Length: 109
Image (cartoon, rainbow, N blue to C red; front, side, top):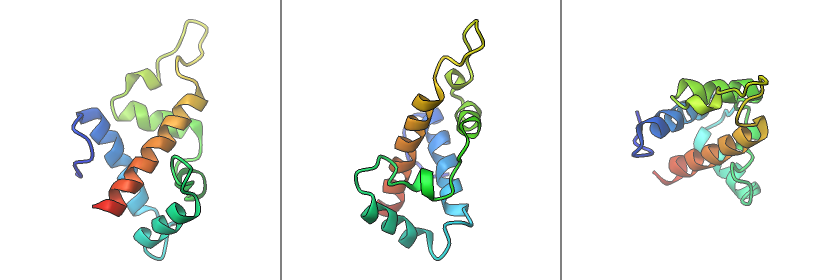
């Protein structure tokens, strides 16, 4: 397990993303060089477009499940009307930011 963050839950979540990036068969050639290419091509995106175009998790329910399994209960908390407390868009944006953080960690370690 990589030491990406000092907070236990955050480290679990970031390591799950790290494992997914490093084990992703769709980021072939060499993940390091593929990630460098994404960073060079999309420097202003929070995730360098790795989440959208790097064959990462693509459905909102997958992202929500990842957060929940990593210990973030708020990702699955619902309101009385059955809607999630955190919208899919907000959770997706947070996921993209975390993917970008993991990409930075991989390229700078």
